[in-house]
Image 1 (cartoon, rainbow, N blue to C red):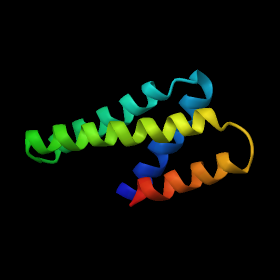
Image 2 (cartoon, rainbow, N blue to C red):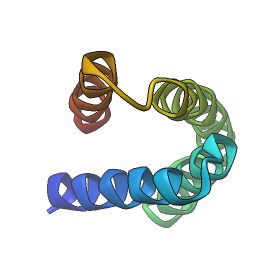
Image 3 (cartoon, rainbow, N blue to C red):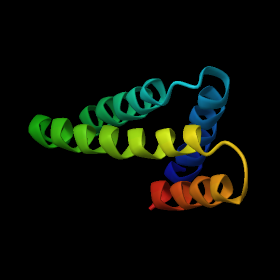
Image 4 (cartoon, rainbow, N blue to C red):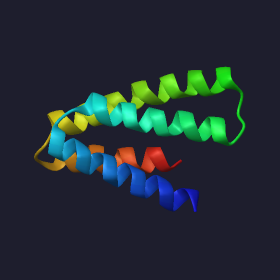
Length: 88
């Protein structure tokens, strides 16, 4: 179930990126969802804050790379690589 939710969330965020060309928006949404879910599942507040900050940074790099390399084979390598890493 969590696996399918992650796939849907990443695909939706990639579509938002294609429409808006704003990687910081997509990274913020990704980190925000992770923050809320972390709190809902009972993780410690400090742990959730730190993990959300790290997730925001990594997501920002991922979405910025996708935004910068819009065409070509490198785009697909970044896209698929990020999806695989994000699902782990």
